Length: 334
Image (cartoon, rainbow, N blue to C red; front, side):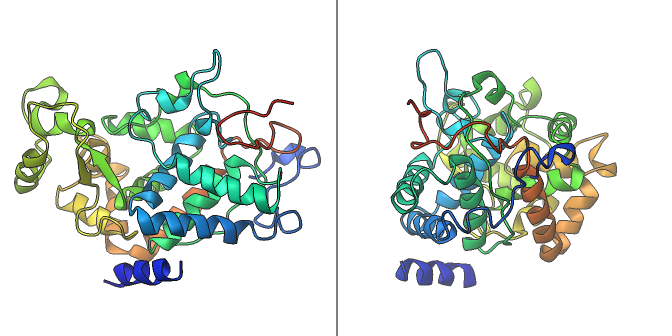
């Protein structure tokens, strides 16, 4: 109820450089724009808040954009680039096509910042700020966002094909996260972003009818929940884009309810439930962390904030690398 009330009020009011090269590249800092664009945080917050008032899905969408950007080429805004010439946009890779959204909100933020301080704030930093603000506005933790990233000049379509996916098994997911120096606590915490947002039926259809090609439902699913999901995701439409809440009890509130769902075998995505139930590996790795976060929202919030800072420091472009795009959808030309 408190989260819902806060939405009403809000709508009414409508990294680090490499250790050995610190002298070569400026160190990222929360105060990076203090002199060049002191209103950056307030501007991003205003646009995100306005978007949230008209679209409750906006915070989850913006948070997901930051994830999907950082896991391909590092946090360089490459996900935002449209197709151009021989360059294929990451937006059209299977994990993003038809599901990644919020690009119009990013465009609005960029336009507002270009009006206030042209050519200063990168699109990559916009994604990082929008993610933090989205979490905080949804009732979650806040953290000091490291800033000073610059924008990449090329998309990586093939890299985007290998993003962590909803049908990946636990071992594969842990490996994908560990490749970016994100440990099991980081992994379980970052998956907790699914406490807000929705997922299309096509991303979990196999769990309902044909898990791993067995022509049977996923046995880890609570039976009542399975029957409920089948009502809106029929067997006859495996590519359905109908939406289901990732965290049915509190779909737009950033809290630890997501982990309680897993304890009741009511995780919507296979990749989520696997953190508790995957045979052979979960019990000794991720399951104890799920239990811990389910029992302590404060613990989850602290771990999530820490993990977001770590993720935001994946291979940033700094100094003279990359560019500051004038339009997040295209590289600068001249």
